[in-house]
Length: 143
Image (cartoon, rainbow, N blue to C red; front, top):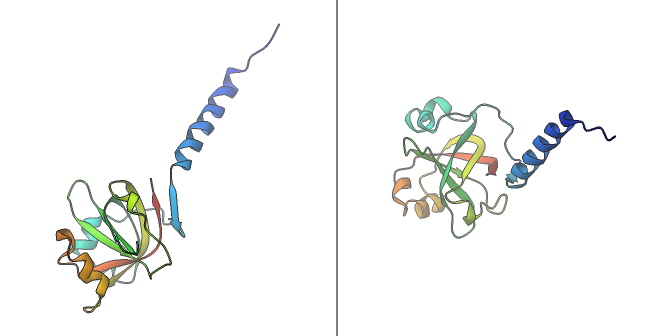
């Protein structure tokens, strides 16, 4: 007579499911290590309180730099507010395929220099036309 061990199937099934979910994630740069997300509205509404501080943001990718992939914007699907994540060219390349997907990103909030060419290009997108602050990104995860 053959014995079965049903209690062993559940953990194996969970591991298999988690493995499928993890495989669908795309880690960019250092990824995301900050545990608690800061609401996008807090960064947009009170940017001076967050300047230079490390933050993690969760949202939906609303835009990506089409030339070099050097920035992406994350939007709150409820409020519609968004914040831009920028990297030095070539450090991280945010993929165009990320647009519309959920993502988490981290970095430090900074004031955008007035003569920033990338900001001027991003200003072509209505939701970024009035940006004065952005996050200097160190990593992201696209789901």
